[in-house]
Length: 89
Image (cartoon, rainbow, N blue to C red; front, side):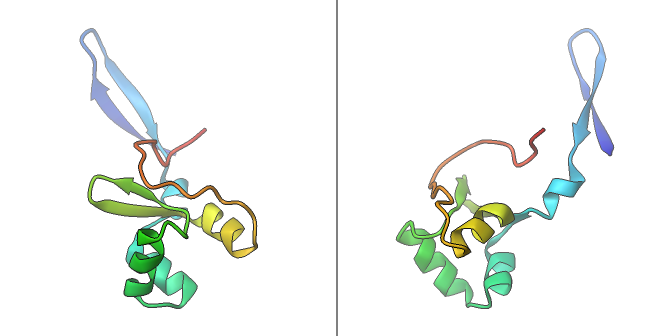
């Protein structure tokens, strides 16, 4: 596991970085490739709130696990906004 040093008022704190989770968070291009559709199709699905996604400012991100659940007919929880970290414990 990699870590990042962050300056605190009193001490230097080392926070873990979750590189393993980076492969589980996809952008529009990666999602389109994974689903074998065009980017415009992904944007249309996002616009109709039909695909599980998160908006981080102007960026759109997808959880690979949520997409796989969505493809399998599960209820992958579609979300339009959110600031949660992709890195979970």
